[in-house]
Image (tube, helix red, strand yellow):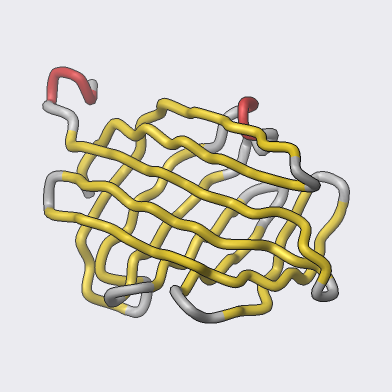
Amino acid sequence: MKNVSINIKSVQTAENERDTTELFTCGRFSRVKDKNGDYTLSYNESEVTGFAGNKISLAVTGDNMVVMQRSGNSPSSLIIEKGKKHHCHYGTPHGDFMVGVSTDDVKFKLDDTGGNLYLKYTIDINSSLMTENEMYIDFKEMDNDTAN
């Protein structure tokens, strides 16, 4: 596991209203060859996202799939796989839902020191569109002086 600095830009569109959030944080990154994916990036949520006290883990698997798991007081598990729709559990402070996650695009360029991810997906409830989402995630390994 390596300490990394992370920049996340999230664009969410619902009912023709667009909301952009940007988060700068620190986290952990590793390359693994197991059931959780080829690469794993994790970080703690902040109050900016509305999910303070939760931890996000992104497992990048193969060429076109990211599994986003949130643990803590609002657990969720979203499968973001290009060209496919998955039914997933989505937790919020107001209750839990089963949602459909349809993915338009997954792009990433990763190596052992960091990289970037781009995710474009929609979330629906009972086949009714709730949000269109885009995430831009850039991260890089921190030197030992910065990490401590």
